Length: 266
Image (cartoon, rainbow, N blue to C red; front, side, top):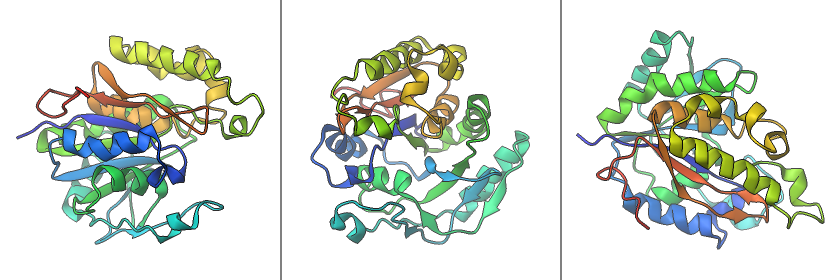
């Protein structure tokens, strides 16, 4: 049985689905570098709830939860099946960890999930279970979600956190947006701590990393990173680095990856 890695993917803006940018092409090729999973558990920055929730309808319905983008985006559909049995297992693991989960009857899949999944696994034929974030909770709480679900990796289940390694949209539209030294300072610090396996420092990134608050005025797009960190454990590897919209870093990470599970060579 393959042990899957835990992944963190930066999904950037919704137009990643159709944009001719490096991150789009990276995700298009990522599925070929992974062993095909039997199912996917994904935590999206756009799936928020005040109580930890688990969502797995019979089939998901594409939610175009954005406005003012290319009309082509609104024609796209990505509607994979859910996995009720896996959802019950996820719920039980989270409950055993004292995280008090609930079942969510919604069938919507937001762009933080369907955009990257549509690039990595375009056939929408791998069952998906969604787990929410809670922006009122801290990094450690989301790390605990990942730790609770980590055993699923040994069952050929791929765990994905989908957010953005930097996420200051106001800066995108400023005249100085071409200057991204402050983004590089933050992402370089993260990469060094991931490479050295310094989970303690990473969990304090919003306090310790240079330019953290400028990169994340609010941290909901970083919370899925902590889920992936917890799910993968140990050291990680940055498997992609690029930018969209000038200053939005599109870094991706693999945690707990083996050569058999993920072919890291480009």
